[in-house]
Length: 404
Image (tube, rainbow, N blue to C red):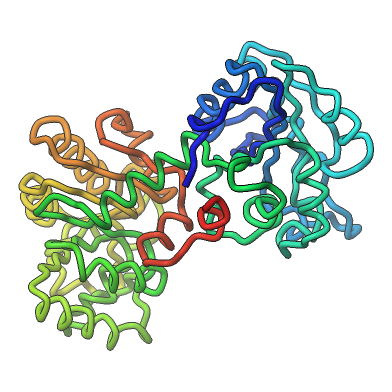
């Protein structure tokens, strides 16, 4: 896979697929600009070479969230709200056009001068985007002499702007941006050349969301720590009472199969020994700590307990490679954030003090290390949620394959 370092962009228009799918408050102020900042090195590479930049991205799912009259909410889902902040970050004027394939957009992109930047409107205003439509992709391709994909977070989608558009550029005229290249490099390092012991920390709500990654990790990991809501499907499958904790009843047999398969492969799976339990799903709930063998009927587990934290920290401390995907509890609520925070601190300590290589990925895990100020204390923070999961499931990502 060629990267932007292989191309001199002098007097060339670079059509860059970025991921500007960022959150806004009610006044359209960006509340987390991580994805925008991640795209800046690639944009600056093109500009510094003497090229011009055409940026395209999706924002939300506008066709799934239509207004009451059945029309697209073009105000809510417009990328125009990114322009001001992007301009400040680059210290350059950003041109914006309120479509991505109409005549006006092509007229502007065709006359871009070196150093100029054009941001196209949300590609998902067109149904053809998610369908991977060939004609739509061809119209997008007219915006550039070179195609650069720097949107790893969308690389698992065979959409027009992430995958199909690449067909319209020769091999020497398409490349991965710095972010895309770093994502693939670091994820590949985990899969193919992880230093032992390798510990995977998996959390989140459902076993069904992580079953494929667990199955694949059984082939390469030494330890798998399971926390979050998904842990209680395993705990109940082992015959324990978990009260009103989140359980996927139809996944219990599969959970037992995973435990048996792990034992056969010599992979150690760690489940929480105790939990912080609550009498309701609320930060104002009554809470206490309970052993996971006997959680009272009317209570639910919303975080891992102290004994679990100590056990998990010991495993992490002795690891040389760490993959973390998914929180240990409902860390958005202050009463139930200690488990996730403690794991984040342990991963950071293993990285900084013990020389471990750590990759944190998945929206909630990334939000956690950002919330606790530890993002710069781990080896790599991935911007890919679903894309990272599919990569670790062993799947080929269409957006990556299209650059080969």
